[in-house]
Image (cartoon, rainbow, N blue to C red; front, side, top):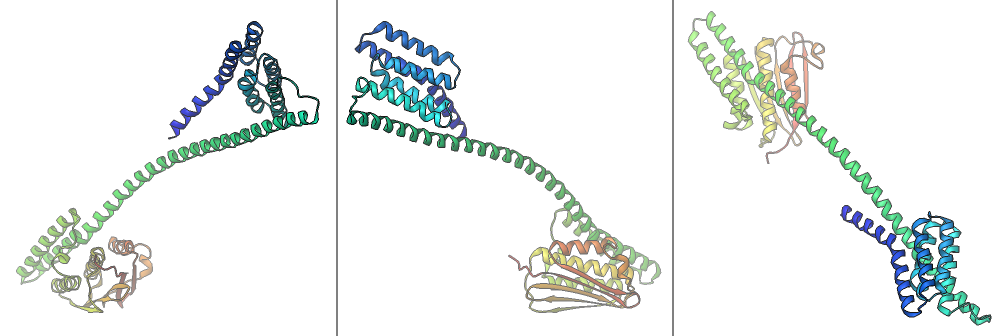
Length: 387
């Protein structure tokens, strides 16, 4: 659209540049055909064409043009009808302020006199008629020229706005490209962090359990049970690793609802570690969004893994609470505990992983512990129902 308007403007500029010569030629031909004053008319027309072609634009140019229009109008009214328009146009275009009206008025006075066949009769009616038509022409030329200026100014303003808009669009395109690059890099980083968390929550915990069972088998007479547990853990860890690579949710959630999956995790953990582990559900159980359930399951697994590695607890309890706006998972143990200030804002990868998982869902993770008293972990996430 902008390109088409630019082409039209260039075409109009060329037409406006050629118009004085076309009007002059038309007036000359018609005057020669009707009045027959060939040499004088042709000579004045040639002088006018040279004047328009050679003289720089300005007050001197307009004054000379008006004089030539007056001289040509003595050769025939056709010059007033056609070539006189050049006087109006160039007076308004190349003069400033009140001089515009002066040039237009002089051209109008010459044209009206040419139409009347000379100056008006020295009577009140003749003079008033002459002044009326001259003033009417000046008013009309001023009105249309003023409207044309406003239109041209608006067109120039639109062109400036289009240029600014194009510059802004180019800048936005560059910013968009940068954002895409940053988003791609952030996506890669997020995927790496996700894979690291999945490896920690599956392979690392599974291998830790396998090592624990094999160490127990070395010390126990009933070594077969520990070896069987180690084999089962290895198989489960391998299955979870494959699910993580395919970005599939935990296998426990694929086979059962969240409360049942948590109950199975707690029961298996208690059997493996020979620790009493209780699980309780409160509130109205309802299906949650897969990310909500996966976050709570992984948080429970990590909390139990930490209890097995560090707490030395004799009893662990998990409570899953369904409330109106949030779902809360509380994990408590009576183990050795620790000083939360030592892990404030950081801690091991397990605590960091739990915090990231919960905060990704705009949830909160609170840890309360004291050496010799035990540890309580509470994870609360929005109760986003399954779609």
